[in-house]
Length: 307
Ligand code: AMP
Image (cartoon, rainbow, N blue to C red; front, side, top):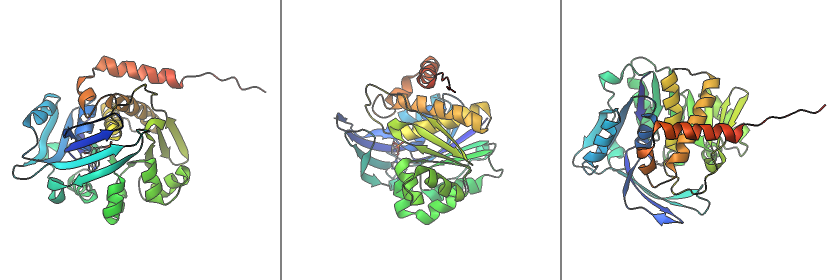
C-alpha cells in the first residue's frame, strides 16, 4: 500500500566520543526513505537547497523513492543540523540548527500522492506536517508522526494541534516527559494519548521502545551491539521500518504494530553501525532477515510457573 513520507532532508555534522564527521547528508526524511524503501515504494515530500547533491537524489530515485514532492530551492541552502553525543552514545546535545530552506517551506502534495494509505510525518516544522494532512483529499488509513524537543521549545501550540490530528505519535523518553510534564512514562503515555493519538511509541535508544494503546503496553528491546558508531537517524530509521512494515502488510492491528516495532528496531540497529546513511545503503533483504532472526532469539524464552 502506498506510503507518503514527509521529513527534513539535511546536511549533518556529527561528533561522537570516537570520531567526527564532515558535513554529511542526513535528515529525518532521508533516513526514513532509505529504510522504508526496503519494504514498499515511497513518495517523498521535503525541500532542499541548490547545494544538495544531485547524486543523493538520484540514489533515492534508484531505490524507487518518488521525489516529485521534493522542492529544490536553487538559490537557498539546505537545512543544517549539528550534534554531539555523550559518552553513553544515548544522549546528545544539539550544537546548531540552521533552518535555511525549512524556514519558509510550503509543501505541495502532488496529485499522484493522493492515493496514500499510510502517511509518515517525519520530524519537521509541526505546521508543515499539519499542512500535508490538510492537503490529503482522503484521510490516510494511518497517520504516524515523529517530532522532537526543538519544536516543543519554539512551536508548542502548532505541535499540540498537529499531534491532535494523528493516529500514532513517536517520541523519545525525554520528549515524552517534556510533552506531558510527567516523569513516569506510563502516566506520560496516558496524558499524551489524551491529546489525540490512539497509539504512542516511546523510543529509549539502546534500551528499546514501548508501544502504548488503551491499557495495553508492548516492549521491544534494542539489539545489544558491540560497537555503536553513530546513533544519528536511529529514530527515523526505526520509524521507516515501522511504517514500511505496516504499509507492506496493510494491517494496522495492535498485533501487527508489535511486529512493526521489531522491524523498526532491527533496521535502527543497522543504522548506528556507521556514520550517516552509509550502512542503510548497503544492507540487503538477507541482512534484514538475519537481524530479525536475532531479535526472535533475543526475546525468546520459556517459563514454568510454579504452584
Ligand atoms: P534522530 O537521530 O533519528 O533523532 O534524527 C536525526 C536527524 O534529524 C538528523 O539527520 C537531522 O538532520 C534531523 N533533525 C535534527 N533537528 C531537526 C529539526 N529541528 N527538524 C527536522 N529535522 C531535524
